[in-house]
Image 1 (cartoon, rainbow, N blue to C red):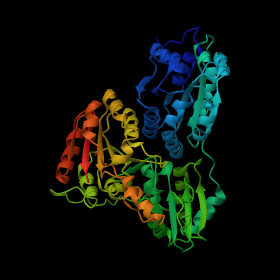
Image 2 (cartoon, rainbow, N blue to C red):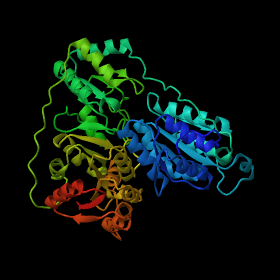
Image 3 (cartoon, one colour):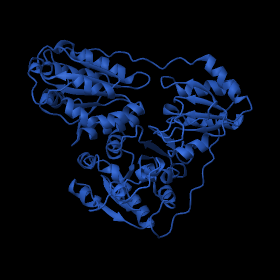
Image 4 (cartoon, rainbow, N blue to C red):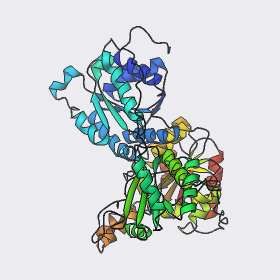
Length: 520
């Protein structure tokens, strides 16, 4: 069935060409205008097709897949309204700089003049959440457009490419296979920036290295970065939100910049020099009265050794060579004592996770207000990959875990999921069940949008009962165990920290998804 036929329609030519370019998974929530793609995927049997019950599940899963597989999947979405449902997690994916190709259906070219009920500006809807957008024009060039989209997605830095697919060019005959298009490689290292970075490290001033993206995914680069810090006395830190961070015993630890603005300003206040590697100067998530937007101290001498489009590990190797640094030997953070029986609190949850996380776990972090307490577990636990919310658009944790599990079916996935943001894409549990994914979702249930209560105080408000009512998840309380069971995912509620650890260990050993509602 996979041999290339002589005659095929536009949709089939796109599917076959993308597969030839290495795309083998499609995350989909299709509608009428995409039925020719549904048919082509079925007939060719070239891609694994994963259904999401909401478009934001499809794009969030494609993000998680790309972070762990290191290559793009394709999504299949329905017109401008369907893309609008998908956009929040595309925003996160774009901020994470992952590769992704979106196929977004549109009305047939001859039908677009009639302003049918689902007519809208598809290109206009896609543009803010994509790095490249194009609308197909005919069956013969459709696959060529798709391969250009794939090349853009895989180019440095990774990008979101969106190809709009009018229905008729998908079903029209005359589809032609298109060759693979070479992607743009990383930018060349700037020798002047390298010299300036060496000068910063040798200045004798307090210097911080802020490193992101591919550096954090490369254990050798992290060890060499720590060696540079050891030799020069510089400090290193990661941005607050990172697409993937390799952590755990045997790996060089790296802290991340705190989310709360006062804490972030305090951490960065001592530095007069900063070196940026695959990141930009840190900025506050929001503006606040009487606080700066840029977090580095005013007057801090900042050099960008390597931008988002560069090769961070290569830049670190060049920097180490110039100053004579070698990789640091890992100095493991001692594992904490296993907590004894008692309530689950922000004071004991990191120790509980550090003891319970299985070997080689993929940890999905959408803990939100609990994130400052859960994050230390990653350095104390066995080796793990830590994936975080990158764009601040909540509702990514459950879909991200679904995609990561499909990319790495032999690794256990543990999701640290705030209860409020879980409700945005709770349908992703159904996808986990359908795919039989080994995902343990831990709902950190404080029954509130707790982080927003802090933000309310940050803007100087003195909240009363009506304000707090908008931030509490009560009347009625959410029952996540019941919701999970309704989508085919077994689960249990726990209130004791020892029970939480045991539940995580049991669930990770068993195949298929499981949900733990942890009451904080």
